[in-house]
Image 1 (cartoon, rainbow, N blue to C red):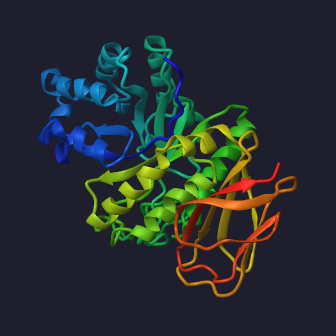
Image 2: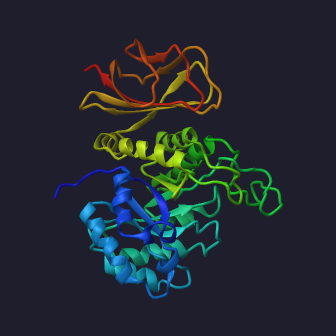
Image 3: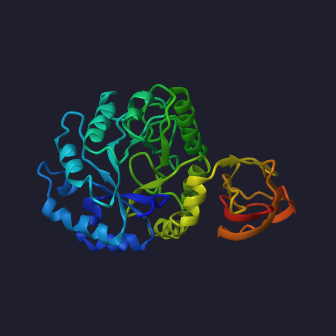
Length: 376
């Protein structure tokens, strides 16, 4: 069977809030367009004796649907029995894409060597699937905790939270103290891209390669967060992470609002396509220069063999941008035409083979994802 590239796009979904209603939830979820399942082991899945009889039909149905798992192995620093049982039993299941061994171990102050030990044990049992984990903190023993995974998720939740004062604990939040729900954040979209860029910078210093995914915020009205993100904010958060190198997206969490469910289903139809996987996983990412406004994030991926490029432009401002916005291409690339619009309704004009522009400006939080045809 030939190898297939996929760009994972999905939600974290708690077992007791959705899946355990019926195995048909797998069909329902897959029909929404998501290509990965992350079952958070709440409810009966957290029992000391794992309910295999209850769970096996879900494994069987996932195999039939051809949908993959980021499989949560219920690992604890003080007891790895459940993890060993899960990995040993499921390591040859065709729906296993990767193991998820730790959720915010840094935020929980788990022993700093714990994720590395878990990874070593998983590799002893199954050297064929990568391990993943989510990190909560901006700068808390990154090199120690990140040892535990080939895939590192950053869960940065900047929407509707006070990043300087903890409304939950009644304390200030700064670089060394306090918890505001988004560590070392400023409450702006750039918190997401800054985290990915910083983790990549540390990877270079440490001399290792990690694959970075992002966990866009799809929740609210709880603890630190006063509201849910809007649909426009959700798309900005997801594609901003992609613009800065995220190779997968797992939003927290589903079920979510009807508004977010609609927009993420629409986005799933694009992000899980073979064309997007080809661009994002097999071609280099290049950041672009934008003239005509501040806080416009632009990235291009170039497929020289097919003479095509994927262009992503995001207005990070809530306000509209008036006037001409120009995006310059890297040296050596020449635009022939805009061949396909994947997201948004920005009308791009080709001013020269090395520049696209829109004379209409950009609306607040407007996102444009287009395919460009290039000259030979």
